[in-house]
Length: 435
Ligand SMILES: Cc1cc2nc3c(=O)[nH]c(=O)nc-3n(C[C@H](O)[C@H](O)[C@H](O)COP(=O)(O)OP(=O)(O)OC[C@H]3O[C@@H](n4cnc5c(N)ncnc54)[C@H](O)[C@@H]3O)c2cc1C
View 1 (cartoon, rainbow, N blue to C red):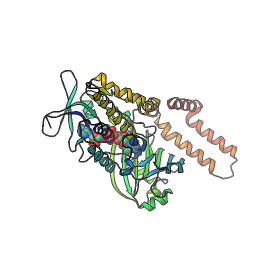
View 2: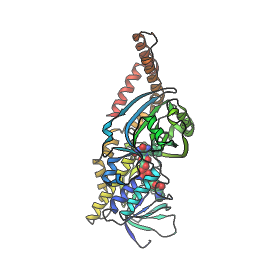
View 3: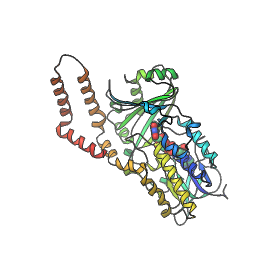
View 4: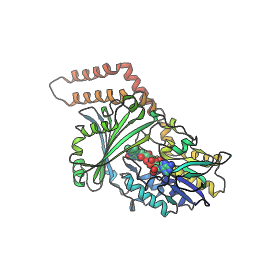
């Protein structure tokens, strides 16, 4: 092993690492992939929605054997207060297409499958192996890695850092800073096991159709955070995540938030009779465009969560991870094919290609959103959800109060809570951040 020099070493066998390793190995490059977990996926946490298009670009026939749970036909967005939810539901028969657009998955199974594809493509995959250090030569160029296995340096022309949100190797090497608490969310998740037919009945599903709920409001107690409920074949994934800075400030415990979310009158009936079998906690990079570190250097590139490539507004991460991994792999293959060295200048091709993709276009579009949400979390996650709920109840409750009186009461409640100027300023700032 120590004698051999690889074309590329990929650190991590998550979505980004597998995409990068598969892309390079299937094009004939000599790839080594290191994964610290017992098996790929053993340490990985996701909701999890898989966006098919991005995987299809890498493995066109993935539907033949990938472990997919349900294909999504319905998405619900809920704004919650303590006793109610106001919802927007989108359900479409169009999503029953022959090649569905989104699926739920279970990462422990999915990552194992993806890793098998990586091996079949020709890469060497070493699990239970932690890369402990990037090795740089006298010119500051990354030339290999050290691992926690006995042995010398493993050399490669380029190292792909796909080590996830903590990004310890990149941080230790000085390629990026430790993410600030306001740019990372801590999410906790449980798997509730329920018979398949019960899920179908509760959510109005047939066959392998699935439904997901994304929820915001008082469930995060005024912190910037979101809850989710995703239907799998025979289980329901339930979770909630909040910015680490908000959790540190309020001293709220994530599991207490999850317990309260489970007990919410809108959620409890959906979980009735379930058996909880798995718990997990994981960080999510949510700093957006402004938190993205340097993406390439001499002998290295960084992809996926390690590069903070996560779209918190749309709750997309794995697709950005897969796409950045694929693009990094394609860029490295292109440089190698032209027999050019993996210099910083040549590897800038990765950034140029990423700039043209939806990954950086989307994150650039929402560049001001993380700061807006962070600095106004109490209004967006407490005040407005409560006002919206009161307004909705006022609208639907029939009690003989004249409608004009109800409408005035609703307007007065909004103005009392935020003032006219506050309402206008919130609307304008939100619109500007959304552009
Ligand atoms: C609760 C939750 C729900 C989510 N829901 C969704 C969703 O529904 N849809 C979506 O698209 N995204 C979702 N995401 C985001 C998504 O999970 C991530 O964006 C995605 O997993 C990032 O992939 P990655 O490969 O960059 O990192 P990871 O999947 O975290 O993989 C990193 C890998 O590197 C390994 N590793 C780390 N350090 C080392 C080392 N030094 N040596 C060797 N191996 C190492 C780890 O063990 C791991 O296998 C969710 C995230 C969370 C936490």
